[in-house]
Image 1 (cartoon, one colour):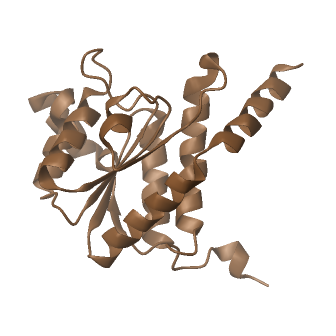
Image 2: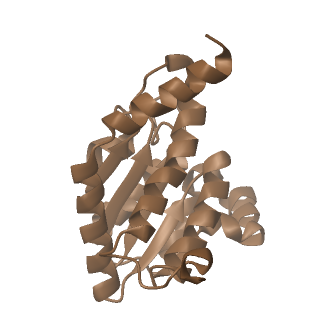
Length: 198
């Protein structure tokens, strides 16, 4: 079997093992956030930061949600990192945005944060703040042992079918899952361009 065949076979296996009931529950929570005029903050680092930017576009345009990604403001992000440190950068950004109980946090991450291993401690601090403020916490992560998967209201854990490919599958399936959410009839408000053309 070629690597391409192996990788795509793994992809098919992941799809067959995704928890669809949790996807439905996540949509219900997002609908509730929108109904109470809450905001959605999408957090990620590395490739997940790029995914966060894309997700913000989709939630705003297709689902009519007020939505932001701290990593889209590189000036503020680097100023906070330089002055206060990387581990607090997201929590302080959310604090400045007056995160509250009407809002929601969506974590896009391979591991979901682990303070003990000093991996994505900034995501852990952000989730802790969200829980303190009573905000909804959602996650799309690649590890069930990370902080996000343990404490989120809903965490979609991308099944590991090959430990050597956890990162590429996790980041790819972040897009699969959030596209499922924004195209869900319960959440979607606006038509996508090509589907609306005859």
